[in-house]
Each structure stands twice: as C-alpha cells, then as structure tokens.
Image (tube, rainbow, N blue to C red; front, side, top):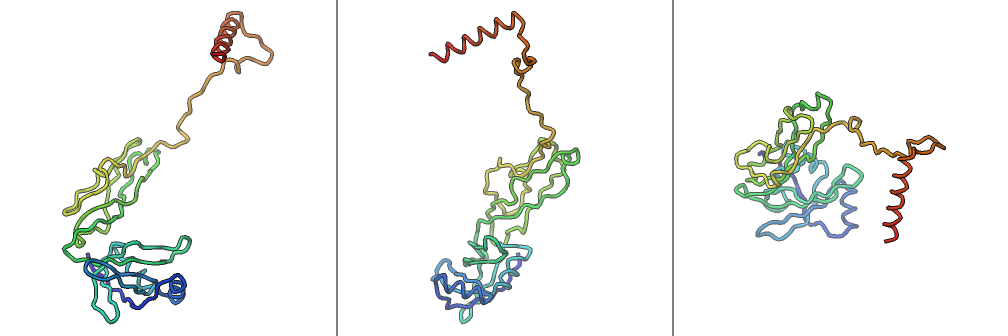
Length: 227
C-alpha cells in the first residue's frame, strides 16, 4: 500500500469554540497519539485531509503526518467524525503505526457480476458493504472483490465465500450473510384465510347441519370463556 503525506499544525487549543474557529478557517481539529508518545493536538487542512482519505486505500491510507517543528510520523486515521448533514469532517484521530504492525480494519466489498437470479427477475440484496480483516498495515487490501454472478433466486453468499487473500484474516463470523437474491415482493402470495360466515350472503341462513355445528362451536367458545 502506498503512503500519502499530510501537513499538520501543532499548538491547537482545546474546546468547542476553538474547534469552530479552526473549521471556519478551512482546518480540521485532530489529535495524534500512539505507543510511546504523548497525545498531540493538531489541525490539518480540510482539502488536504479529503485528498489523503480519498486515494485507492480510502480511510485505511497510510499517512505520513508532517507536524510542523517535529518529526514526521507514520499514522492511520481513526475515529473520523463527519458532519451529520454535510460532506464535511469534524474531527480526526491519527494513530501512529509501524510497517511491521498488525492491525484490524474495515475493508469495502466490491460486488462483481450480475447474479443468475437477478437475470431471472430476482432482487439483489446486499447485507453488508464491508468486512473486518486483520493483517499487516502494508497488506491492507483497498477492496475485496466478490463474484456474485452464480447466485440464484433464494441463494446467498457469506463471509466464508470471500476470496482467500495472503496475509489477510477475516474477523467477522464466517456464516454471516454478505448478499442474497430474493424473490420480488409482488410475487409473494399471502395465505387466504377462509371465513365461512363471510361467504354467506346477507340474510341467508346456513343449512340445518351447518347451523347445528355453528351452535355447538358457539357453545364451546362460551364454555371456554367462563372457565
């Protein structure tokens, strides 16, 4: 996995008012922490952060954080806080890493092909769009391709059906469903409950045998209610 560089300015003050001031100036408040270092409050350029997190590696990019007046640190972005309504970052945690370190990350699943069931009128139903993996930071896949072309109506694929990747271990339950092909809702017929009383025309009396059975049923129901 390739590395990207990102400049960071130290000396950021804490507090929501200061954070708003930083964002209004086109910066994003952030913090850097990791093994053997004290947490450092910094700010990064919003546009540069967006570019760093939109390479092929996405949010799993290896970022060389160039802190002004300090050494460059190899990091990964964690706890990325986004605005609930706008496409904006609010805060980012950067965690220092080493190239021989094992990490756990979420990787996007890239569905390939058109399922047989979809071509026959079924509906493609993705259950999840990412999977948790464990691997070296240098072996994090940018995405995991899953061929779904052979799935028929009523069929599904699970975590265990994802391709084996060298040095990559799937952490999620292997029987967890990733996608399925379902029958269109319009074709699912609901069972019809017959009601003999509703079948009688208005004012029509039931036949003699039917009347006796109806009376017995009513008596049994009344007996149960009084118990």
